[in-house]
Amino acid sequence: MEKINWKQKLSSRKLWAAAAGMAAGLAMVFGLDEDIISAVAGAVVSLSSLAAYIITEGKVDAERLRSASAPEQGRGKKEETP
Image (cartoon, rainbow, N blue to C red; front, side, top):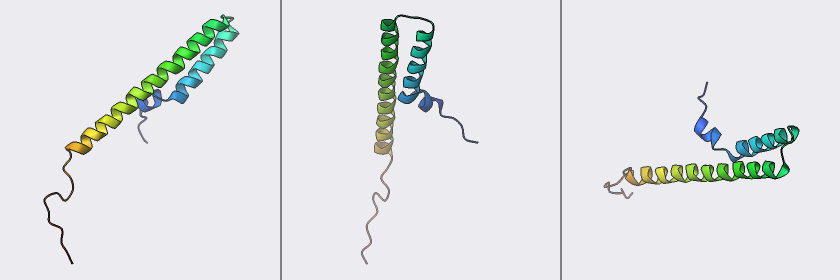
């Protein structure tokens, strides 16, 4: 059984958009003002997009550093000519 990558799951914009939709639906059921519902849903989607961007850029930067610090394969070996 594989481990669940919660960091990746929680950085999903789809998850947060679905959560905002569900929260907006529940807010309507309980009679909250439409302006408040729109503001909260917009804030959730905006913040989740920002968080996903930051996490993704961090992963890209970490991979770039890992690739730059790893020695190149075959470095220092002479190529053999047939």
